[in-house]
Image 1 (tube, each protein chain N blue to C red):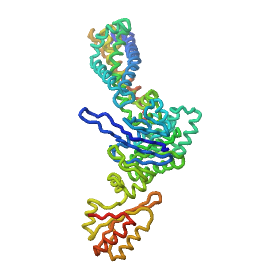
Image 2 (cartoon, rainbow over the protein chains, first blue to last red):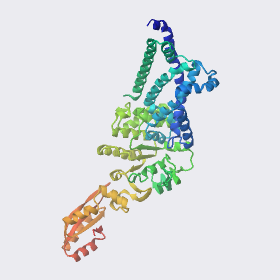
Image 3 (cartoon, rainbow over the protein chains, first blue to last red):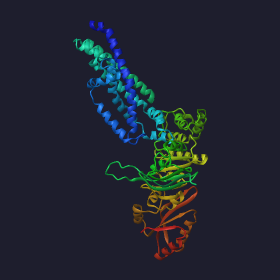
Image 4 (tube, each protein chain N blue to C red):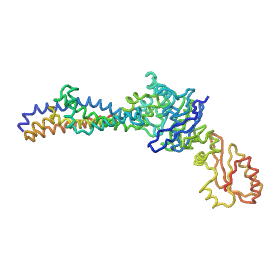
Length: 219
Length: 342
């Protein structure tokens, strides 16, 4: 317990690092995932911009990268991280890894939630003369917004989970804190302090996500 | 010149699997819809009527043939130009297809925004439409707070927002109960009569055709098998499909089980007399039979009217001298269409 009090400033710093890693990764990965998810949905046969070839290629890409376990992906994309963010270690490299890791999962979540929009609703928009881009902005995304928010909430929590292995390539955050100061130094109190903070973070995310979705769906 | 003109239009979808051969959903259809009329298209599900109606507003493009709307050939137009054409054609749907993320107001405003109507005019136009469909109080409700009938009223208001010349109704009343159906049909009649909008009604319910349409096309397996005035199709259906639809709502000459049941209950010859327009047919029939000493019993049938014109079929069981019956039937040939059950 004394050690924990001693480590308090470091614990808070780690919690902040987790928020920072996940936050930046979600902004970038979220946007990229939204675009790829839209591309998957729109090119699907029968949809607004149907294109069998593009859809098949995107599908294969997503299916290739999505199943790679994150701890391996993080190490595997190091060379690419050096090219893109200039370093293969530290928080920037971790963020790069999180973006790559979440990108494909988000695209699937986005695709699935867009598919819940009834085709007739899109057809009604076409029937009043709206073009594809207008329909995407003003009908498709607003109609799927509630489920999309819940999907993103799910991903944020998964990314918090993924960020726990950041220490592998010299990143920080609560996961790294728990391993470095708790697990390796045989101090379960320290480990559990980090775990509880992660739980609080996850709960908080879910509550925000749920209430946003409820507000959007009016139920 | 007809407002909508389809000439030899075919629409074939690619087969779902490799070993399936492509079958056309619409197969060589030629159809004219005149300015100001309510034109019904009736058929069972899978007959191709939903595809046909989507060819009119270019939601589907024909594989071959030509579609002309308001003097404009649609085939060959670019998507951007087709969107402008769609602004002049409203459409309502069986499942209403309202946007749940928008209020009633927002749903009606959307086509105005798409058409580029200045924002200052939205208020006036939307409240005009809400008054027309009788939903002024619901302007700020969301679609999931409305009943089916109210949803379809919103659908109609939305479809009329940009003052289209044409309204396409795709099974617009099929998801509604009979009373709400009557209300919505009444509203559609007003759209036609008060606003002068030409309506194309897709349905599988003959009752909808009877109470709303002026002319009707009967579709079966992608083709139009019968086409004409609603009164003519009802009073004298030619195709098997049309006969089945008509028999569903009015009593026609008995067939099958009905006929067997009549035979077992009534002696004599079972003869049906179909007549249209005017009541003289019936009395002539009864007088002639009485004059020749033929006994008759009314066993089946009914009289109906479409917009004040009557038609009907009465089926009689005739007993008496065979020769007298034959002579009576021969005399009555000009009065009614006579079919004897064999």
